[in-house]
Figure 1 (cartoon, rainbow over the protein chains, first blue to last red):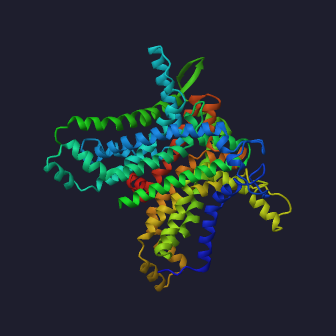
Figure 2: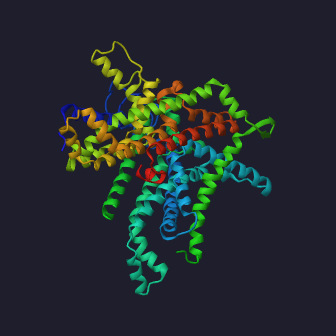
Amino acid sequence: MGKPTRAWKLYVACFYLFLFAPLAVVAVFAFNAGQYPTPPWRGFTLEWFVGTGALFGRPGVLRDAPMLASLLASVKVALPVAGLAVALGTANAFLLERHDFPGKALLANVMLWPLVIPGVILGISILAFSSRVANGLEDMLDADLDFLRPGLPLVVAGQLSFILTISTLVISARLRRFDRSLEEAARDLGASAWRTLVTVTLPYLSPAMIGAGLVAFLMSFENFNTTLILVGSDPPLPVYMYGQMREGASPAINAVSLVLMLGTAAIATLFALVQRRAD
Amino acid sequence: MMRARGLAFWLLLLPPVLWLGLLVIVPHVEIAVLSFSERVGPRLYEFGFANYLEFLKEPLYWRTYARTAIMSVLVTAITLVVAFPVAFYIAKAAQGATKAVLFLLCLLPFWASELVRTLGWMILLRETGLVSALLQATGLAAGPVELLYNDGAVILGLVYGGLLFMVVPLVNALDSLDFSLVEAGFDLGGSRIDVLRRIVVPHAMPGIVAGSIVVFMLTVGNFVTPALLGGKNGLWFTEQIYAQFITRFNWPQGAAFGLLLLVLSSAIVWIGLRLTGQGFGETMRRG
């Protein structure tokens, strides 16, 4: 095998330093007892997490009402996105792996499109289309259709448009590896098609379904581009953070970032554990 | 063979048709139609090319477009060059547990939100930031240095954001490289450059293409990094789309911009696949 030279090893070491430096400074300066997340270091504090705002004029993340509201908005979006991504992704997997029909190759190809469309464009196209539908229907029905106007329901639709591709790919890949003789055995033993699905096939698929759900939740939670276009008056966390970051630096933003990183790490660990158990 | 289709088939067909129809295809037809409509009076629109002519007439628009395209190509190239030695190290030099750990460490930062990563770079690069402080402490700079709000910062941030999507397909491609081929290349008198150019790079080509396509796409469509690390000098085409749609409420103009960006992004994907004769599906699944 190749014997790496010293220069090569040094380069790889620098690469990893480069990779982790931004995350490390975000985490460290969340504990800085000063107005700004910059040197000099003014001592260690938890004020930016639990403080009341008496000390720095700005409350810690856990007492910051607009921040918590944006966190709640993110959860309100991510939960339905994850749920729908798993349910519809599983249905899509069965359609693609268990059925043959004219146009199937085309459908499978079109499903990949959302991955190559920039998020901002997915956002504006869904915004323009839903507004046209709303304008048309509201005149016809003489009623307000708020869910078709910028807001959280539209954000769910926008994020689902590409997250569904990911969940479909993940769940299809596992269904493809399923040994169908297990289903035949269940049927031979007298189980109905439905019972076979619930007691044999779905349990086999469950690690992929859980994994797809976790990934969908994370992708939804962290999505910015599509969300920015479709958001109404209650911004999810990334959009709120973006506004804060444009206004100026504060260790409070570092603190919420660290909370976000820890939450992400927890979900990623869960994901890794589920995958390991499946293999 | 096709059997008579039952209710289950039609029920399964419904969600993807609704999804791709109502959230992907029809909305894009909508912005295409919108982009060819011009305002002739209050709430009155006609078919026309005014939005595209406006794009060509206004230097800010087409320059931002060209700038986005050129910088994205540059970012993709730099990302490839930065990532290649690391991917090669992970695939061929590192072994056993080290290899797995190095690979995993590459993935970790990308679980963090794009905003968190960008925040990190802002703290490092701003005038009062860590790098400036280090430069002053070591005597390399006399006063505070502003490293933020220039093209270098934007490129740095975009390369950083693209690394994962380059390293992973490169490692996957290089993993299957038989090292005895490299040794044979050296035995036959090839220099390092020869071996790299004629053996390693051709073998890694599927990974290079997949990685470059994904990095280019993500870079062209990026919004946060140019806006926050470039500030007023960021000038990215996605911001123009946002400005037309949300700030100025000029949807036909914004739709034309959106379509132009989509054409740019799709064209590069298509050319990349054509040049190397690879399929769309397999490349996307690898990515």
